[in-house]
Image 1: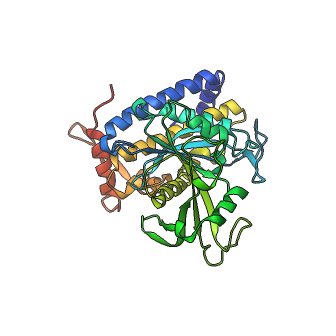
Image 2 (image 1 turned 90 degrees about the horizontal axis):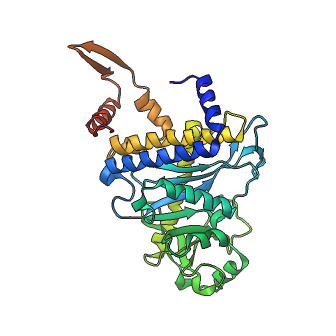
Length: 368
């Protein structure tokens, strides 16, 4: 493992020409991703022909010193406000970062230019044959005219599911909906959730300034006991909205698909456990390089799980649990019979999982 001074000198050298360095690192990550997905076969995202969920979300990275372009954030902290993009591996897996776009702390949450740039970087990371097989998901920060217009530009053929602000017009449309228009919503397991309903508002709104084919879907639910009501709550119910261009499927299925965007928060937490909690360098370009290193570290762990831990509970482990159960296992290197053997503690509860992972990795074809 490289020492801190060695890493610092390497980052300094790369940051001397940041555009060239970032382009090279991102190209290498894309090549490695294509190879990893190829080796993973049916366990790779999109291998079953379904859409690959691509989740966008911004997060706060605090700074405890005056770093370049660090600024007060909307959460009244000080630091940076990067835009992150992750590919979701679904319920049986974790996910992997496609882009970590570093931004100043005072960058907006609904800046269309940043959403477009982050999405462009993310799509460039995907294998070429999968770039139209995506579902772009974001919270209401992505529900802007410019971003949705960019997603639906002729020739793009991308599906989207984007959070939408609850405007006065939407509240008025909700008030005009008959009770029969609401159908039960689903919980995380796809079962009917008591006290939650979904309905479509598309025909009740003037959407002439929005992309053609955009549907507006609302969800209402009774707040949990003890929850604080909001100003936007209507008749004791909490409402949320999202927009999508998907034409098929039940409303409850589309709403559940959109709500699963919350798994992006798990991916952000994993990235912060892998170096994104704080940015260690002063210059903005240096910290851009650092974000690429963090993304690569997250990807290596995600690819390892996809290739070696599929069909096991460890496929969903986050970094802290991976370190505790697999990376920190006690072992001993033993030489004998002109061979080098790794002996693991037989009493380690997850020794079998680790041995299975090692056997699967050894069975992969050697890189050329």
